[in-house]
Image (cartoon, rainbow, N blue to C red):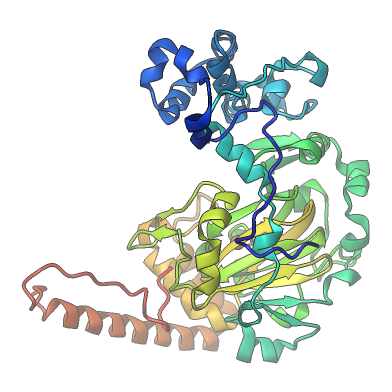
Length: 477
Ligand SMILES: O=C(O)CCC(=O)C(=O)O
Ligand SMILES: [Fe+2]
């Protein structure tokens, strides 16, 4: 692996159409934009928005009128949207991938593609996705400062986990190799058994055969990510420890019990199969319902960068109730724009979880994940007893309807969880409810102090801002 620092120059290949970033127009002898006619009035951004309204035949015809529009109408994101939103073939999920969304939509092979050189087209809007796709990841994911490195643990006991580790990210280095799925889950083996089975990849359901073809040749800036919560039934896997049949995998024993087990069949979604090419991944988020998670890499490797609950990562903007998160569109954009600052931010931790390893995501932590090579992983969310209070608080407050993953007919997840806990873990529940009450009291006292008394008026007379987010022992998300 190369070890280039983040600010060292990197070499990017030239764009397949030959188009260049906007800045190059100032030294160029000609500019294809000059022949755009009335379209010249539009900025590149506005032009793309306009093109988003066109159907495929219009996009194709307009692209044949001049060189600049040819370049714009080839923008593959336009064809991705057309294909995903309206193409029957995409909905059926079982088709041949032709390398780009446009070629797939139009059923074109490589030798049927027109190749107009666009050397005098200058556009950051068109060049940016290409730059992001070809920006090497290694300057960002290598050279992790030792003070940021996520701990790598060959083993851990359940007691050590509860006492010292349930609030910290760590990588278990020796758990997965014993799982039966570990030896049999490369794409070749999976295709032998499941090639026609459809898996969810963002908003589409594609056969595994189609997805694997896509994965092998996509040049998307943010590749479509297979993230399927029903894989257990689709693949008829067994993880039930009470069954007599052999298990396909099991959670790392050191993570101990999962208190959401008391919900039985009413528990929210908790298991996902994740498959994606290099550069695919997950943009910043916290896991649902204040749960913790483990993520086991069966093939490939993943770079993780994480921040504690109260520290939103640089470039990520969170609304006061934490229900809305705004961040750059793609992982590459974030790496280009914010990674250097993030690495220096107190609380930031980073690590590479390799094949056969498991990463622990503590409740409430922000994380961004990028696959460094094509990867296959399983992730599972759970509630350790050390986070029972945070989970109860999250379910009870349900700020901005953020509780998620429960079946639609379950109207009171908090009540259901309390009921289940009362049946199976009475004492633990009582302690947690008492703690919850203490925290609610503390919040109320803070509120009263901030507004200057029970009449709710601020003693300062002016506006004020108030949040629980900086309260390290209180999690509101
Ligand atoms: O593997 C990934 O892309 C990350 C998935 C994730 O966010 C998780 O396991 O919590
Ligand atoms: Fe996650």
